[in-house]
Image (cartoon, rainbow, N blue to C red):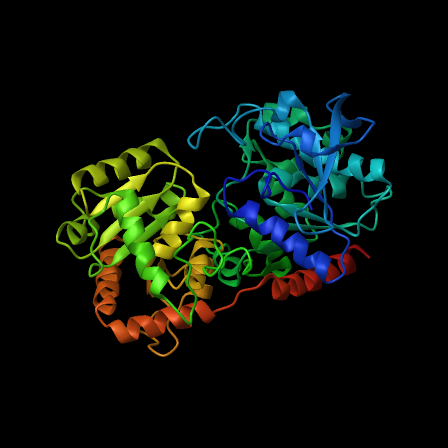
Length: 484
């Protein structure tokens, strides 16, 4: 598995949670899984095992060298190999100095990651059946495999590209072709070019033996113009190679009964008293009015347009009106685009006691929001899978989501299906639709018996990685059959 991030070493989003969890699940059912990723500045060298020899990686007409460190995913036997080059990865941010900008040499950084994967396998004397590539940062490895490694010891290796988010493609000027070996460019430069630019994800989509997305609904959506992100003509001819597999979640890692961030107010389905105390604790800690009778809506997210943040922050919009009129409270945790950070902060300033925001990343506080909220907002314009709605269900916090991607595959509207429902769902990404769903949720909150029943039903839902791992295995076999 080739990835740019994985917990507990580096994280900007759900990719970092999904990759190690899937790796562990595949290992448990018998696969020999190994992860490759950069060693970023924050990963302590002293906690890793250093390989004695450096790794040479072809770049342009020459070669770049890299140190190799090794560790194990926690509580598993899955090796993690980290590529060590301070000039490429010794920086504070993974992809840029902040959530609004990118490092100017990202093409070179992740071209190096893709090329190094082959050299590392040779270095280890271990040739995999499958190269499992995650998102644009690893996607060029499928192009390299098809173009220059096709007649080497990798001749029988198949590539599987998992698209965690089609909106992020790795688009760079054509001059950044310089980061790839000349032999590769002479063989097929066209596959990594789209509309005159280098496009990492496009190269992977064109060349991978199989493509997966992180939910069944998203696999269908990306074939529609609205969600194809300009890649429709690349995806359409390959639709028979696309499979949607829902991400799972770690039910041991996310358990309100023993979550240290919730202590001493832990709870479970048999005794929910701690959840009420957590709500009061959350209200106090983030600066909301302490009131058990008003529904509390939580948000933990990247503050970006994709996440539908503008549906919430419009100063003259219906969500602001709903909160101002006492329909509910809003607790927000997140970082992202400067515009949305500012809009969220302004909203909190305008609605003291009703809305509060922390522009930060805090795993403990995110868990307090999951446990202490009554409802969890995810008004995403698109959501390939989403994990927070699964965490919310686990914590008895009813998700309120837009009907898209993995949100549509996991949340069932309580008004549409009162006996099976576990949250609230709205369709078009419009402020009025979100506000209407929040009003429906607030009305439902007043029905204490029904609310308690729905919370317990939500806590029983299971989306585990074991089933996902079996589905990936089936995809791997199909990819190998195509290579054979």
